[in-house]
Length: 317
Ligand code: UDP
Ligand code: MG
Image 1 (cartoon, rainbow, N blue to C red):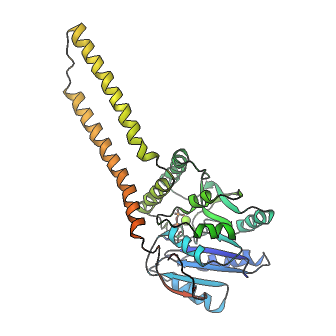
Image 2 (tube, rainbow, N blue to C red):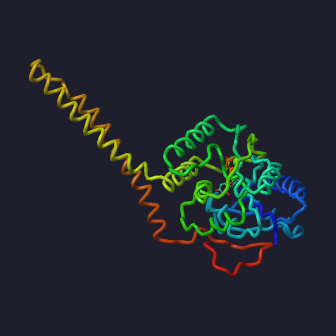
Image 3 (tube, rainbow, N blue to C red):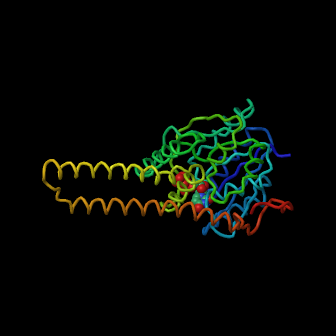
């Protein structure tokens, strides 16, 4: 029986991996319990996979899952949860932006009896103004739009108990917003706070495209409000149309002058078609995801594993 599983999603992180391994080893040896370091190599094109494989040859706590291609951060975490066997499961980024030392604080909370301990960022260092602001905005929009409470400014750096992990494995959806799913699952949750460091080396692996995908996954997985928006806006627009008509009629009947209206028309035209296209786009976001679920393809494909016995039981992947 293993006590702690540490899941580390890896995508082109050759510059930091050795240091990440060293720091994690240091921290985990302090726990005096058994543990595994479960690296999920999300289709890296650099030497990341080779480096972990090398280490796993002489350190049996190191395990490696190689994906057949890049499936994305959230899927990599999901695969880690499928393969983890620890009593507590910890998810941490490979780039040391999440300080491994905080794991000890999380473990202390877990031992107090909490089932989910998430790490809340008080501050983010070394990230662009754009990233900080969009992230800030995203967490707040998400909070306003969803009915479950997803903690603000919290990434995937967290500890979850075995029973939470098992519940997570029962959730079948394909567009995975892991931090939202953990909130949805419930149980006793608490936070530890930290200041997020700069990345040790390398560059962010979250392109703008990936960030948009993540935020759309979060929003659509946990809220129908964007869809309802069309209804509200339609109502509001009809109402203003009526009001507008009343004003025009008033001037026509009592003042005898007509409003020169072509530019009003042009503005309305732009505004209305713009709005309708946005709503079509929003519909597309949902329909695309429904299609994804309907096709029911596996979430990920594992090319090979090191240090793990092949799992006989059927995994989602
Ligand atoms: N990552 C991944 N697959 C991806 C993108 C990122 O496994 O497609 C990993 C990456 O190696 C890192 C973590 O997810 O361990 C967070 O990514 P990153 O640090 O680039 O994101 P940021 O901290 O800039 O938001
Ligand atoms: Mg990072």
